[in-house]
Image: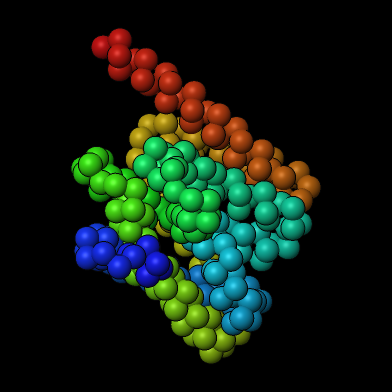
Length: 243
């Protein structure tokens, strides 16, 4: 990622400012990556497959979702569709970043697309909004500075977790850890009444549609939950404006 810093002191300084902004996220990402590595090997993946999973997908919630479905032996198409559904927010992140970074060359946008994470998005947008005078090269330098400490930490900690996972005796049943971990990932995201409505609908529909083949009930629940959440947000906004 050093290419984004070019050779000018200013861009170098901006890159390291982004690096400092992204570094605290390592303490959040690291433990989850270790846990993913452990659970992936418990689910039957070897160390190389686990590491490749993190390198190719690089999306914590989607990885845990896919892993859960793989452990349940769901069809590949269901695994892919569910993981993509969980990652739909990345499309919104991308649209949100377009006014700031959309003028970058195609090859740089390709790198940006790969490195869009919850952490890099949150860190970069705060900086861009606070400093609207930043040039495009400065914005790119800051963005890549944000991901520079986070992404390697995700890879390394996944590897450490996978190595640890291979040392865990089979008698240590950890099957329960995966769904509990996923719940722990999702729970902090329930911050508004609309989120709670979406969560309630997803749980209700998932239970009612549990009999559908190939775990299709999860996809149906996801679609209906998103629709319910969006509608609830519209209704809550109208009520707030009326007051």
